[in-house]
Amino acid sequence: MKQALTITKMKKMKQLGEAISMLTAYDYPSAKLAEEAGIDIILVGDSLGNVVLGYDTTIPVTLDDMVYHTRATVRGAANTFVVADLSFMTYRLSVETTLRNAARLMQEGRAHAVKMEGGADIADEVAALVRAGIPVMGHIGLTPQSVHQLGGYKVQGKLPKEAQQLIDDAKALEAAGAFAIVLELVTEPLAAAITQELSIPTIGIGAGRGCDGQVLVYHDLLKYASPYREKKFVKTYADIGTTIREAISSYITEVKSRAFPAEQHAFGVQEQSEIANLYGGQEQAAAAAESPAKELQHQGGARP
Image 1 (cartoon, helix red, strand yellow):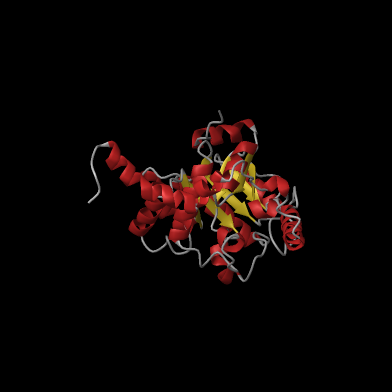
Image 2 (cartoon, one colour):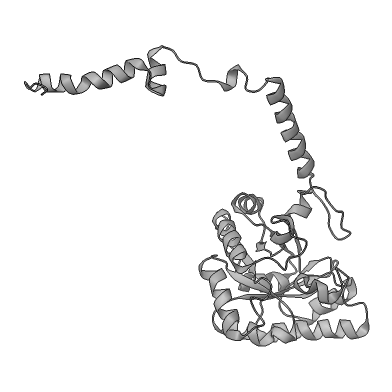
């Protein structure tokens, strides 16, 4: 039976040069399939706002949304390490607020760890969570919860000052006790440099080949969207969206033409009496009416 990774094993994987695979999932069947495929880590990302809930950004995603989807995901992947995002403004307000919200993801959502966007500015909150026994995965580079402040979904770390800030942020997160850091939309040379600087794993998404692992969104990997928007940093491994659309279209056609259901999809009855048993016909009603009188006669009594 597959055993869930631990943060100790993840660090060992980095030391051995063994790449870490991570994939998002947001519900029971998706998580179950990912676990059966052998994924190392499942991320219940607040990206569910975009790919499941239909929002334009991750900002509308609530803590209740995250708890609900994390709980379903963990049920589907009981033997996989599951990380859940702390959604927009569930932290940064105070250390106490962060602790309470992270505790909900762990207790109600049953997550094994939480993920937080930010660097040195959230290091004190990361440290508080770690002290409380809550594993934390960091997330720097493009941070979708700050998309409006960043001016859109842009590659980060192109300028020397930006690059140095990301290096400092990564080191601050490591010092605070984070067990791994996601690097999103970061230039490849910078991501490789950060990876070399840290003793904890880096997980890249649009950050090139130098990271210790990679993560993709479930719906991107499978083209499970309509319409699907191509992304430079994504490789698709199947076109499930087209398969689903065509399957539903075929079903509609067969229903309209009455080709479905066919004889093999229907249930027959061997005797007429079975219909009464199934649907409550006249014979069944009569038998029900007679049964009390027959019972009384059997006991030597009479009806009043």
